[in-house]
Length: 140
Image (tube, rainbow, N blue to C red; front, side, top):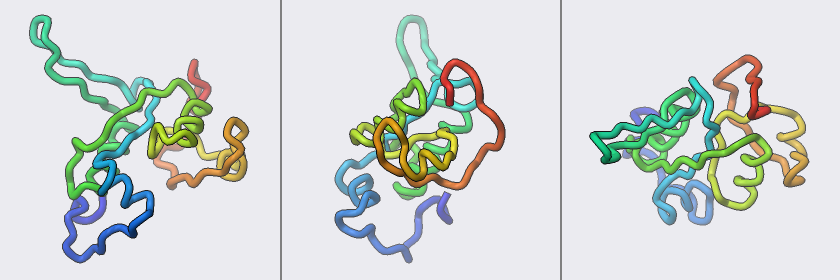
């Protein structure tokens, strides 16, 4: 979170034409790509009888998206739309097409940083927030 939770009267407005300006001023929400993985990103659905009450993502990657939303929208964690992705190639293609603004949980690789093969572009990664191999059906 930006201190304090993005609510800073000292911060300038985002530069017009920048990605941050587009997300905060034009789009009005953060579109976050996420993988459905236990502990990292799982949909938590609560119901009453047959009525859906709430659908909320939970886990480390979901928390990253909520924190990013809070830092962009003055503490408001509700301004994030989650897009369920199947693998890292799907994530890079979603970024390239503009379907998502950020993808949570993609491993930092030199290939992805310089020339990711499915899109032919390089991407900027945040500092890692999890160290360790993530194996399984998603090949992430």
